[in-house]
Image (cartoon, rainbow, N blue to C red; front, side, top):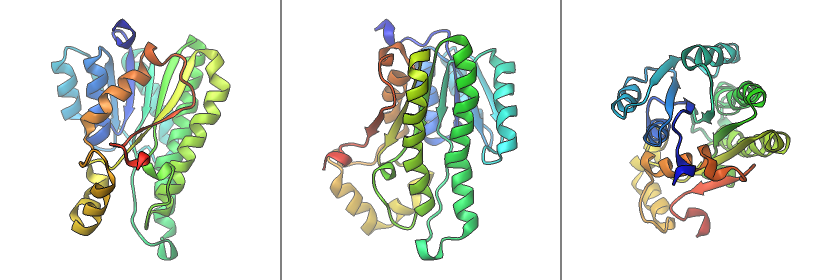
Length: 250
């Protein structure tokens, strides 16, 4: 089982203060990694959970939708921990408005955080990892990487593009010892799906299609994240893993 051991590794997790990001951060810490959580709000809960596991934990508060903050975030991460072995691009938002009426601000807000920050943080981390000869990058995609969704054109566009970025960087960096892959979570019980879960009819329709017959949880991403962050995935490049309770198989 040593191929899953992350002892001595440092993971930078965006959106790590809650939800899926927090679940993955704790999972990596359970496997031995130290954690840097980046969030627009505080990450105290994540830091405390990681420290209870005997790992080091740091937090950086920043608005990742602002491009001019991204380089400073990565520099701060290096100042805090000295290196970044693992990057998880998890931070994201969703705006639900019908396509015909979708405000330009909603479109730009979603694209700036869900797509632009992923590209630039991959670029910053990639340069660092190329110099060191190794690294793991995990981008968070979605079921809407494959489907169109309803009332979420910006989110759908961003998550389709996350898969493209993942594959594009993998083509260039696989030979340099860097594995970049993505996780496409299914319908998860997080803040982003609160509106869906509150709509009884829509929630029932979703659950009826999931073979596992339940909404996913942040804990469901621990194993896939550890796998993609560890030596166990050293020959996996440019892949998008669906963690969806069987949604895509239906």
